Each structure stands twice: as structure tokens, then as C-alpha cells.
Length: 379
Image (cartoon, rainbow, N blue to C red):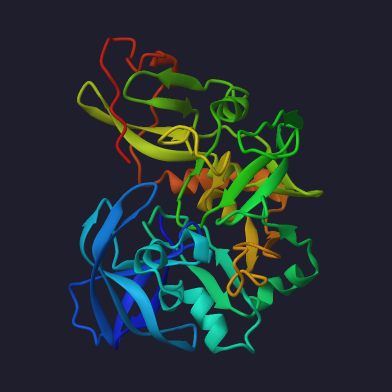
């Protein structure tokens, strides 16, 4: 599932993914647009999954009721493992591959240019990501610039969690606690300078799931009775009884944010003996490429649907210190007691379009079933 917004680039409308985990704008080159300046500089923008390749160009961009003139973007003629018409990066200047390649301030990311051209706009964006109940690839939400979603205006009085470390080029915070069924999981960090008992955490709207250390994954799913950990050279997954749940929450500073149990697992189909069945896989997973140099945890949409998120840029769009004074405010949208009461009905509804549930007692840790066949999960 992805979250998108409509933007206009060079007179043409595009539907782009809204991504707090990157900084650059790219759109597909399949449409004719009015370019104010074309260059021969080619850029390959890489993401956790997928990439976009094309030349740097400049055009007027409009979104959210605001115009930005001569905005640098990648006019992508080639993409790999990416759907949609583009990505709108909401990150800091220091993460911009376009500016690094172009070596000019005029190639800085769109949010820096927007706040420079419109200095009266409060320097923040707000994101309210909604939860799909029927398994669509996209879902609704509200993306706003310089104003709060009226439903969540109380976010203005919440804690401003500073971007940590202060030199970060990403929207990262210091997680202070992770709690599973009332028990705190010991946090540790591989990031230099992180305080003991904390973990550096990226809040990333461009990632559907969450990627966290293996011991944290185990802490979540090992407490769910009937779960099976399958670890082979091809997969490292927890198969979880679809109707089971755990009580998971994350704390930043002194503020705790519970996670709806619907977010802990993702229904997928498997084939066993030629028949299709449904299993639920862990949505909090180990990183795809091992440890990351600038984060310990990556919390994507499965966390962000539980909060209203406000990303405050501070003076990061005008200063050399990329994230100086930048912060994130989070307003919890999840009533812990209510969502646990509602879980069974919500999960049953979400499974209506899937085949029958697979009997996990037949599944072994090597990914084979009791009759020797190998399960093959298909999203």
C-alpha cells in the first residue's frame, strides 16, 4: 500500500508517492511537460526497494495550493521495482542526490524552495494516513503544508521530538522504549553518540512496513501463541495465527504510541499441495540489506497510521546544519483498549476476500509442511 498526492509538474498532473524517507522529486518521462531548463546530468535515485533513472530538469511545480518556480527534478525514463508516476521527497537538503550531482543551490529539494519562495507559510507538513479495510494497494489520507488537519489540531500542543542526531539528514528520532504485552524490550543502537537504552528511528511514509532489529522482531512475534519462525536462505519470516494479536507500543521522549494489532501482520496466500490458503506474515521485519549506517529502526506506514504526524523543518531549509531545530510531533490516533476489542471483527472483515486459513501446526521452521511440500507466500 502506498500514499499518493496529486502534483502538477510543467503543466501536467502526476500522482506521486509522498515520501518522508527521501528528499528528491522525480516523475516519469512518459508525458510531455513544459521544462524551463534541461540538463545532461543523469541521476540514479535509489530507494529501499527500487530506483529511478533520468536527467535533471527544471520546471514549475504546483501542489497543495502553492507554486514553486524552476524546481529541480529527475525526468525518469527508466524505473525499477517502482510503481506510480513519481515520488515527492519531503526530506532534508543533505539527503538530496539531485543537489549533490548538480552542485548548485538552485537544485535543492522542493520543500526548501517552497518555504523560501513563500516565507509566510509555517514550515511544516502534516500527514494523516488512513487504514484500508479491503486490501487495496492505495488508501486515503490527508497531506497538508503549513496547516494542520482540523481533526487533529490538538497536535499543536504535543511534544516536539527533536530530530536525532542533530546532524541527521533524515527524519530520525530517538526511540526511548519499545513495549510488547507490557514488557519493555531492551533497546540498543549502532549509531555513534546515541544514549544508552535508545534507538535511532526513521519515520518513513514511503515504506509500507517496518524494518527493525532481529531481536525486536522476535520480541514481538515470539509472544504470540502458535507463531512459527521460518528461517532459511530464502526467507526470515514469522507465520502468525491471523486471529491472534499482541500489545505493541513505541515511546519517544515520554510519549507512548500504541500500534493497532491489525498492523502487526499482513495476510498473504500460500500454495500447499496445489491448493491456496491464507497465512499472516510479520509486518515488522528485519532490514532488507542488514544494518543501516544512520538508523536502527525504520517505522513506515504501519506505524504512521496510528498517529497524526507533523514534520517541522525548523531552519533546516536555509542553514548548512541540515536538521538543526527540526522536529516531529506525533498525536496518537489509536485507542489501545478499543482497537483490541475491535480486532477480531476487523480482521475477519479483512480476510473475506482471501482463501481459507492455513493450519500453522503443519508448518515447520524450514518452511515445509508436514507432508514435505514447501510453502510459497504470495502477497
